[in-house]
Image (cartoon, rainbow, N blue to C red):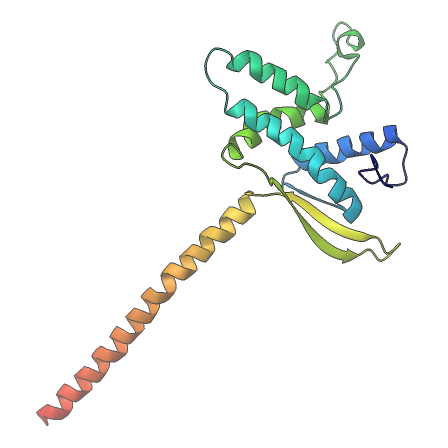
Length: 194
């Protein structure tokens, strides 16, 4: 029986697997294109991991009233567990005259998650990511996949251009028929006059 044996092990210890999922989640949230390329089993394991964090940010975006700040802070702290923490020695590492080390990518991921993605997915009840299979890698034959966030800028641009094409095509056809129709009428009129 396979009771309590959900999820893939991915050939790693538990600590390594969780750390890898955190790194992948950070990369996905911080990526400019809202997509990363990884192997298919990793993408399938990453999907529920990231979607739980996005759900927390979505809940924070829908909070209102007096408890919004407290509830939002609690949800931020819960979501921070899905990413690597900031620099632990940030305050002690700085000396007089030295600049503090930059914040890590995990802090930036939590910030983007709550400032941008929570608002984007506010009305979406789930399904924030999409997995697209790419085929096999040439070196080791591993199945590659793209995991991306839905409703990204590329997708919106493609939908807008498709709408323009659909709206523009009947107009062009109507203009062409008018042009050919009026030209034929002129020829008929000129033929009748002679």
